[in-house]
Image (cartoon, rainbow, N blue to C red):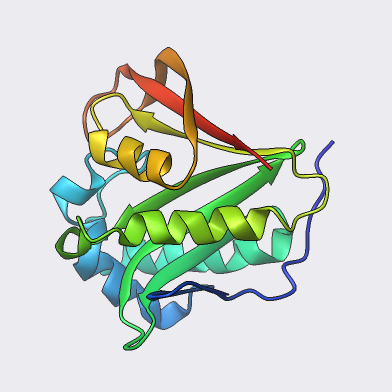
Length: 182
């Protein structure tokens, strides 16, 4: 059964980051920061953005998602400056949550994705009846695999030909599934 959840405090804080719901004015930071960067979107499940208008529409859908009580897309921002550096989303379904994240390339290698994921996992642990959180990554996406491991998730499975990564191929690709019991 799908049960929705009302996030009492929509912003999540960690030592260096603030995760907050998106705002319409975030579209430019998303588009110019990472959504059009072929290296960043290589392992994403969505196509590289070709226009700022496309990103504006994406942000509108992300804003609407908060009303469902099933999807929680947060902007990853630097705590001191408020600069948008990425996005992370928790999606609830049938007693589990799956998570996905993206980070601007100039912010890679500083532990920020791990910090954001850890904060979301901690927040997820407060959701009643949520049994586990899981995520997938392309088998060649070693950086994301490492982020999940450092955040306390463990590799549970290899799913062959499971997901299409449109920036790589129209053929389904192998993924690793990571999970963490709550």
